[in-house]
Structures are given as structure tokens and as C-alpha cells.
Length: 418
Image (cartoon, rainbow, N blue to C red; front, top):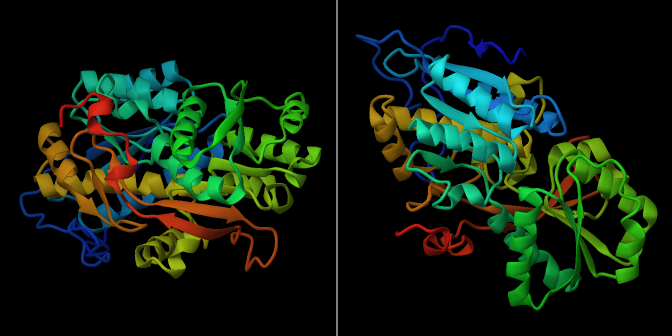
């Protein structure tokens, strides 16, 4: 799909379909479907910057596919007072400067009403700097701790994704008591990696874990062989790979080839569905990590079954990835807030978002009042290499940490007054 043109789904059949505006509601009659008498013709425009090229391109493409699904549902249900939604996708090239430029163009030239997107801790901060200054709602769908801190935050900043403190903490609480407390980190040397290590160490302190080393590597590294002898010599119980996308795939493969699994358990804060498919069963066998979503939850979570079935119908039987689900939820939440607010004025939509309790695909969620962080479950998965029902059956769900504000950094720590 071109990154320079808006997505315009086919004309709606004006039928009512799936929707829920309250916590725990099973997706039923759509609240999107409203009386279109006296409808306004101007579309509701959502800008969607994401790295369609570069190391995270596979995840970004799935974000777009799922975001398109949320737009199509909204339009098929009649839009809002007849106003349809357009998704304007732009390639931020995983570069903070490019992300800021594309976001500015979306606001100033394309006149978007809202912005959803990002797939990097760095790019989402640059996007947020632009939207914050112009009082445009930004719903970020990538992990970051900093975006919730008062120095970077605004009343128009929302964070649909998990953050590193939540994710790393959940994985640490599961893994360190099971596998051991002598820890080595292999860390991508940018905000995502640094924040993940901080989250693991904070949770690990309460568990008696000890950091033997935090070994940094550049973003986009291809060769990790020079790090392996040092890691092996430290004899850790657990090696934590605090990296993402292709970096995760390459480091898992090379750690496996080097034989590190013989005496060390490998874990990662974010175990991506797309990375597991790219890296293969043997390399990822036994690796444990966290995720915001895994399609296999459909066996026990009704909302996951509903979301997966919609995605399958739209994409030839394919299942959504974790970051794809965030693309869906980020857009759907904003559109639901438009309906709840009765219009697209930023302040009113932000207030509606802040009050929202929702269950789009994984169970109940809500935005914390002080920082607009989405409070939600963290899923712990283990990669498997046998007894797979099909090519997508790659993880066992070994634990689900339920939504709990107590697992977030406090509002006071983030610099918020309440």
C-alpha cells in the first residue's frame, strides 16, 4: 500500500456491526452507527506515522492492516453523523526527525484530526512533541516510559501500548523466581533497551536478582558473536535480550548457535509474533517473553476470538500480531471517543478517551487519569517447536498478569500531581 495516500474503504452498507463502549462488553451492536440525517461531509482524518521501511517494517505493516480494519468497521457502520474516516499512513523510516516532519505535514498540510502510530520509543517522542504543541491528540502504539512522564506529556497524549516498566516487570516476576537470579542483559543502546533494563532491575530488586552485566549493542546490529564469549564466561542463570525486531531475531539465533541455552535461560521483555515467525522454531525454542497480545488467547478470551475472526475475514485467514492489535485498538479507541464526545474537537475527544473503559480485543482496559496510560493485562508466552497445530501456533500462554495500576510507576514519580 502506498504511504502517500489515505486509505478509503469501500462504501458502507450502513449496517450496524461490532462495537462496545463499556468495560467488559462483548462486541455487539455498534455505537458507531448513528443517524446520518444532516450529516457533515468532511471526513475524519487520522494520521498514522509508522516505520514501513527499516528494521521494524514487518510489525509496522501489521499495524497498518489492523488499523485499516478499525476504520472499515467505523465506515461500514455509517461513520459519525455520516462522516467517514480516512487513515493517512506515512513512513517515518524509524527516524525521529523524519517522524516529526511527517507528523507536521499530516497536521499542517493534510489537516488530520488525530494522530495514531509509532513503533519506536524515540520516534513516538518526536511525534508527541509536534502533536502536543498543536493540541492534537496522539495515541501512541509503541512502548515507551518517557512519553507518560510529565516533561513529555500533555492532556492530548495517550499511550495505548504497554510500557517497558509494565512489560519488563511482568516478565521478571514470572521468570526470575523460576529460572534464577544471576542476570546478564544484552541491550539495544537506545531508549527502548535502557527502559527495559530499568524495569527488569526494579522488579528484580524485590526478587533478589543480581545484574552481572548490561552489555550494550547498537540498534540494527547484525553480528553479536563478539558478545557471546563474555556472556558465557559470566555464567548467568538468565540472559535478557532487551532488543526488538530484527535485532531480537539475530541475537536469539546467534545465542542459540553459540550454545548459550545449555546453561542459561533466554528471556526477552517483548517476544514478538513476527520475530518468532522470522527466526524459526529451533532458534526461539524455549525463549520466554512478554507481549500485549497473542492470537492464541482466543481459546479463553471472547474478545480475542471476535477480533481474530474479523482480521481473518479481512486478510485471507491470517491472524493478527501483537503490534497489529495495537494498531486496531489505537484507532478504534479514538473513533469511539469521537462518538462519545459528539464531535472531533480535541479537548472533548481527549476527555472522552480519558473516561473510556473498553474491551476491543484482549479484555478490560482503561486509561489512567494522571498520564493516560492504558492499564491492561500483560501476557507471558513461551516459544515452542513441537505440537504446533499450524504455522501460527508458535507460543504457549504460560501466564497472564491482570490489569493493575499498582504495576505502573506512580503518578508522583512521573511528575504528575494526581
